Amino acid sequence: MVFKMEDAKDVWDKRDRATEVIFTSVEKFQRSKSNGLSKRRPKQGSANMIDSDKTRSRMAKRERILTNLQLSSLPGIATFTDRAVIGMLKTFAGIHRDETLRKRWRDDIRLTYGVGSFHVEMIFGMNAGWAVEGAVGSDYKIDATYLSPHVNMASRMMSATRQYKVTILFSQAIEELMSDQARAKLRHIDTVTVKGSSVQQRIFTYDARHEGVDFFLFNRPDEQADMDSEMYSANIWNTDQDLRQMRQHISAEFEDEFILGRNAYLAGNWDAAFRHLEKADEIMVETIIESGYLGSSGNGDESDVEDDSQSELGDGPSKALMAYIKREGLRDRGRLVAPK
View 1 (cartoon, rainbow, N blue to C red):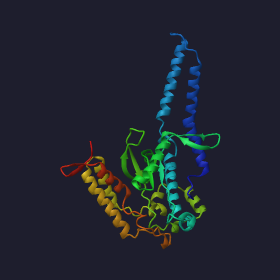
View 2 (view 1 turned 45 degrees about the horizontal axis):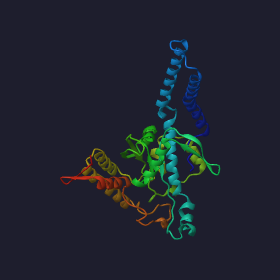
View 3 (view 1 turned 180 degrees about the vertical axis):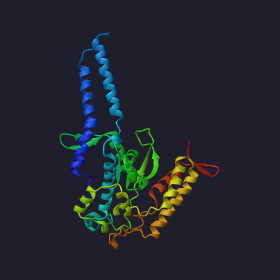
View 4 (view 1 turned 120 degrees about the vertical axis):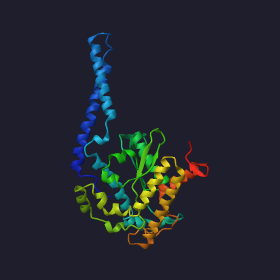
């Protein structure tokens, strides 16, 4: 990946500011809690009882502050979140631009023997929240890892990309932290309740397709990428060639039709939802075929053309929602309705 998240000095400065906001309160809270527990329980009506009540009140107030601390209050969080997402999308572009991954690995008999054509793909899941960093393992093997419900949510987002047939999925927490320019490029594909949670949340994707895109034309030296990063602006979502070309198959007509289908689906009007989603899927297929985005990943090499069986046409989220409607929908007077 040649797109820097941010200049090193800026990262450290913002880290120090965020640390001061968050962890200073944590340390004070822990010290107060420790001091409060170490004191002997005072007698009723004593001056110590008043002091203990004040300590507990301060501790409770600090705990409420920490619990309610929003990531959106951290300085520079929108820019940082945008850069994190761009980093993933630039990785996607880089995979389909890299000569070794596209050709040498594809033709390497050690990888293709017995399995046919081999190509590299990556899927991404992204969430925002706190995590505990630490070493986990045994005396024989130990790894650094991150543990928290938010990490588990990111993992579920990544797994769900297969269900919706997309490259990247974002949680609602990520979407809320991004800049307005970035949000305008995301697509709300569903509202779900994930395992282990009772809270409904919207999930989003950035429509990224490599077939028919000449990523090799947009390659830049590392120095140029670093310079562009230092001059970062949210307008990059409208000007960067990689970001624009990977979603060139998305038309305004398709977006309008999908929104109608998704809203009808979420409202329980599954009969109308199916019609709109089916139409959206047809528009996607027509756009891909008519615009020449079928099969080839561009990059100046016609041997990159894949079988249609490996490169499924149409819109993954539309197909996923239609499949769910067919499987779970009920028939009422000839119309599909959501189960109660």
